[in-house]
Structures are given as structure tokens and as C-alpha cells.
Length: 271
Image (cartoon, rainbow, N blue to C red):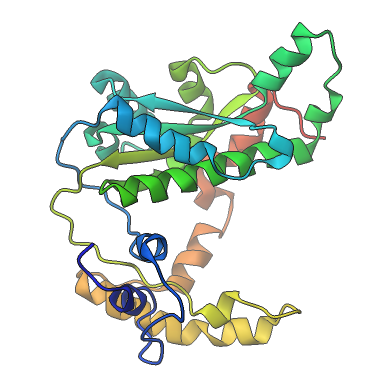
């Protein structure tokens, strides 16, 4: 990693008063330097690297040790191309060395119950749905950190939720297993995107009690810093406008507005 810890902090916040964190190490540097990569060189990835990344993913916390997630590693060019078409026609999916699809998976527990002639009514409640989603998300984030620490570029793909039924069929998923997020991994190509600024820490960190006034007070300065970053990318955009546009209506959610029905069709019940 060529940049210093202080440089990553400056890029992440663009705050002249925040030039460094009190504590840092190589792991924190990897986290602070994260940025999405959507241009890949085409270099292959070996099975051992994929297994290392998945071992890191499995080391994430998991509720009650249920381990209610699975991941499908897709390297076949034809399958990656089909998945790219299903996930909003994002060509970089096909270009990635591997496309990992993280799955909330209670199917394993269902099969255990069937094999032991046991009841599994608790899997039909909304908390179990959330549990599977959280388990999968924690695992996926560990995978991102592991991959980037090994020098690979990554980008999450939420658009696998655009067509969960079709992707489940493509991947041969079992009942009560649903794709939640994809992760494209590859060697970064000609990447110009830097580290995108985040909201000031004061906007997300609350001590003892939630303070909406303090949190919202940081938004205008964030808009300015984000605009400065976008200017380096030849873009103009407003964070507030983006948030409101993305959540404006059911139409702005797009195909994912029917995600609840997809959960049901794939065997999930959420009472």
C-alpha cells in the first residue's frame, strides 16, 4: 500500500481538521482505502485465493452459530455473462476474475430438520429472515477486506436482487436460499475513481443518545466535500438529491419492489 494512513484519512473525509486517526494499523488502512473497482484486467484468480477469501468470510460473526449463509463462486464466462445481464446489464461482472454471490441460506437448516424429523417453525418468522441477511452481509464484508488486503479490487452488486428468482435458478439454489448481494473481484484495470468521502464521523456517531440535530448539521459540509471529490471525477452530483431520488417511490426502487414476493417464491416465510 503506497499511501500513508494519514493520506487515507484525508481522502475518506476531506476534513482539514482531521489529518489522522489516533490509532491505525494495516487492517484499518485497508478499510479506509476501500473504493469500488469496476474495471478489471482479466487476470485469473486461483482456487486457493478464493478459498482464502471465503475462509475470511466464514470468520465473520454469525448469530447463534447458525451460519445461515452460503456463497457461490462463479468463474465460468458464459454464466458470468448471464448473471451480468440479470443484474442490470453490468458488464464488469463478466470481466471480473470471479463473481461471488452471497446467499441468505436457511435451506441447510431445513434439510437438517427434515433429516432429523424435527420442527423448524422458528425459521418462518421475520427475525430469521433478518438473521440470514445479516449473516450473509457480515460474511461478504469480511470477503471484501480479505480480497483487498491481497491486492484484488472489489465491487458489491446489489442488482442481484433485481432478479432473485432467475438468479436462484441459474445458480441452482435450494429452497429457502436467496441471493442478496454479489461481489465482483479482479485485478484493477485503469482505475481513476479515488476514495469516495463519507459523512463526517459526527453525523453517524452518537454518544449515549441519538442526536438528530447534530447528525443533520454535518450534511451541508459533506455535500461540499463530496462535490469536491466528484469534480476530480468530472462529475457533478448532490448527495441529498441522490438519497431522495433513490427512495422517492416504488418506481425508484425498480425491480426490487417485488423482492418480498421473491422471498416467498423461494420458500421463505416472514411472519
